[in-house]
Image 1 (cartoon, rainbow, N blue to C red):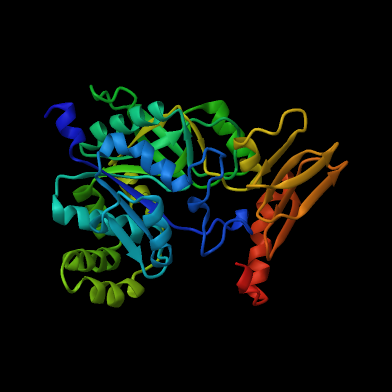
Image 2 (cartoon, rainbow, N blue to C red):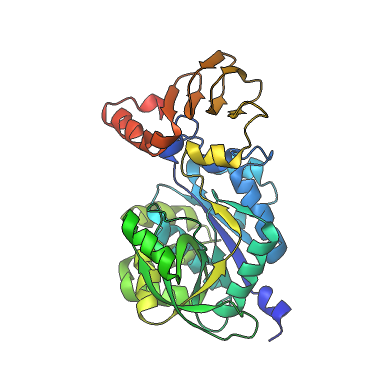
Length: 371
């Protein structure tokens, strides 16, 4: 089969879920981070994800998101058809979201190769990403579940790692390696040893696989989840679709795709990896937004928000303003200020990861109106 024929089997899937609690109060349940422009590019994260996949899948793109986000997603992706918009009644983790997309696509054509790419990642240059996806498609066609591993730039403890084994020597995918193991988030010393040893990549949650192979592994390790997803997929496009989704979805187990499919498949020798040499950021906190948006010249301060009114004197950090309130910063370094009409966050870049604990406290105390 020619390479261009292979790519015509490729279908992109964009899981758009998660609230992004470390980006509160900018990101909330009703407007999660993938709906925001966090890079100053003029494009939301989900719009940018869709755009970089469009040349590869040529309209063959499916989005899986929460029912509450339907209107916003459709507004941002007007070319998305109803048949390719999958709405979750409630969050069920990545195995259910990606597995349902695979099940629906399998009923359309069992030979489809699907790729799953999160809606909230920042990637550049786009051409390097697309080249890696092409290699992943060719590798998947050889009978592998393929992950795109990110070349580590530092000893991060915030990501899981992929340990590679031998090169696979696939003609159309010269960068392909077999995967020896998926490793949980390590401590600092272990992460440093991974960088020194080599052969480890960050797990960014990007998967490319033949839908029949993915479903085979899901059936083997999570038969209850597989059966429920296949029942929903069988009703897709029929009058029974809504009733079946409403009845079956709440009964499905919650589990991540890594645990349900990727790790067991790696143990069986069915997982490969393409190294991603492109720049990648999962925009996990406000420190990341500072990295992705250049500070104003001579000020060391990044300011985001239309019409933001900020005065700075010997201050550095990031300000995100959704109000017309004047914010004055004097003699303070690496500050993070996020000002919205009903909530104000003040922290530092160093403590940006701890914003999640504030959200958990607010939820526990019943202050859910600001979440």
